[in-house]
Amino acid sequence: MAINKVVNHGSKSHSGMKNVIGYVLRDDKVREGFVMITGPYSEETITAAGVYKAFLSEKKLWEKDSGRMYAHNVISFHAEERISPKDCLEIGEAFADRFFPAHQSLIGVHQDKDHLHCHIVTNTVSFVDGRKLHQSKLDLERQKRFTNDLCRQRGLSVPEKGRHFDGTVIEDGEIRSWDKNKYNLIVDKSKGSYVADCAIAVMEVAMLSTSKEAFIRGMEARGWTVQWKDNRKHIVFMDGKGRKVRDSNLARTFSIDIGKETLNAQFKRQAADKERRIQDIDSAVAGADAAIKDAGDAVRSSRNERRALRESENKSGDHGGKGTARARERRSQTRTYYSGSAADGGRTDHTRFGERGR
Image 1 (tube, rainbow, N blue to C red):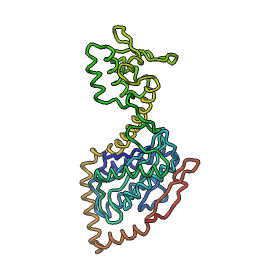
Image 2 (image 1 turned 180 degrees about the vertical axis):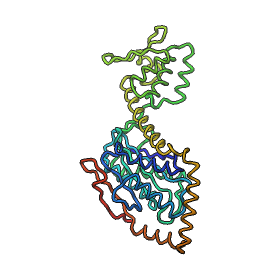
Image 3 (image 1 turned 45 degrees about the vertical axis):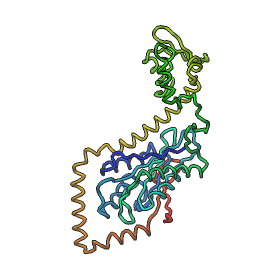
Image 4 (image 1 turned 135 degrees about the vertical axis):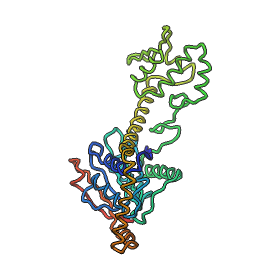
């Protein structure tokens, strides 16, 4: 199961671009060296400094060194998905080839979590004609559909509404599928009913918990003590007045499944979802750390660089043809640089080069 997300934070500054490139290539994230870059790149190995320099060179060449600096996609796979880092990298490459064929894209597979995910950071300036990358909501929907198609072609799972990762149907009574009408019905019944009060507390706390311990703490904060023992079949909830309610009683009364197995499965799914959200936030922070600090001098730097470039071109007398010639050269020499996955984990000593068929 692949989830394709777009990270938009901190993408309008040089420092933001530098930080996100550095984040994608961190050694503790890219553990086996599954990284690559598409488009013009002249360095022998893939490094954060080299990728940043390559991105910046294209921006300066086309005088497009302002505004949005990069696009950032993250394709994440379920922890139980049987996918290798190599497959993950190939999916990222296919995605970049489909949607950003004229743009440089850095692709890195992160293996620091219990689920594989690849980051795709794309230069917004085309190395072919200098045009800026623009994406609409329709483009984002197409990207999601394309990612799903890639998964189907490789025999991987695809997210389906109303089903778990393993394909089983989410039953009407499961916590994950509690709907607003059922919740409101219980709320209406709760007036004067400690059993309904317990059901509401269980529903609300369970939806926010990622472990048995967190669930118990949440129920205690609502005034309910939880007796959850491995050698007992049922969970027992007790309020401040000593009134007890079994999970089986709630299941019969309100047609909701809140047994141990169901709750533990729910906590596991929510923990995985939380981990993915943390990963997305980490990526966003990496690109936004220095955005505010650099906002003022970024404008001045851009103006100075643009002025210097124009003066240089005027002196050479080849302002009009230089960019066009450079673009033709880029198209003829475009390569993809793969970083190897050697047993020692090094990604700079085992680089393979291959011509990209454009």
